[in-house]
Amino acid sequence: CQETEVPVLFTAVTDAVGAGLVNSNEAPGKNVTGTLDMPVIADQIGVIKEVLPEAKTLAILYTSSEANSEIQAEEAKAAAEQLGMNVIIQTASTSNDIPQVISSVVGSADAIYIPSDNAFASAMATVNAVAVENQIPVFCAVEAMIAEGGIATTAIDYYELGKQTAAQAVRVLNGESAAEIAVETQKECALVVNDTFAKSVGVTIPADMLDKAATVY
Picture (cartoon, rainbow, N blue to C red):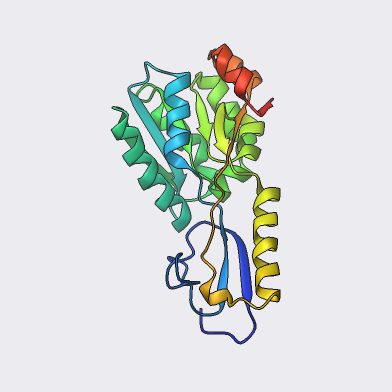
């Protein structure tokens, strides 16, 4: 991203530095700033352990061509290992590979985690069907994916993220330089639970988790 005379604000970017949009999140430069939608992955892995305290092995699945997914997968691996879980990482080349990739970890993983991966997100109906067929719990990074076939997550509210970006735009219109406005993340994420899907794969959501969830499907 080159320096621009017109201020630019982005929203829902996972890794602005890696994408070359800014020099750093703290001091963006280039007359560009905005908001990130990087999930709070350590919290999301913590949710898996809360639902499945006996889980020993976590499979992390994503699409190999999606750089943002790879970044999230590495962070999820570190978080899972810190909680004492073994990690299996499997990737799909295309959405057509997804059923086979899920089936490949059945019997060796106690649960599956899927980051905010575009190919998997668009194939959640397939993910749901294969998971139910094989009775394997699936957890995802994004609320829309949970709604379609995941158990639970702490999710970013994209509407609220858009409002954060709008507030940055107001600051620019009031005379601040976009280059000097730090890139922001969403601090407050809501617990989202799909109790229907959980039951379909033989998982019981703890009552206290259902009580504190912002959304239950």
